Amino acid sequence: MDTATTRARVGFIRSAQAAGLSLAEIRDVLAIRDGGHPPYGHVTEPLGRHLADMGPLPHAGLVPVP
Image 1 (cartoon, one colour):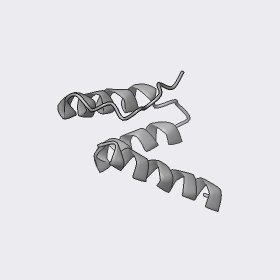
Image 2: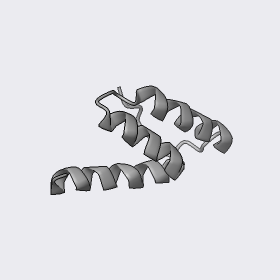
Image 3: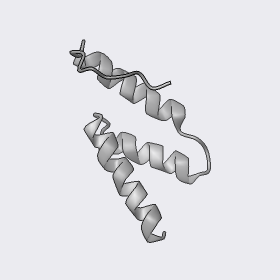
């Protein structure tokens, strides 16, 4: 794995942890991605669960991403 790929992977791991994914969930996402498949469902499902657990968040002037 080259340096740029390693940096991107570590960045994803940090972002995923900050979003509330467990290391086991992150491992699963990376394994799917490494297998050449997009891990969308494996990312959105745990994130949705974590967001639901957090409850309503205060609006901080965030703009929705199109």
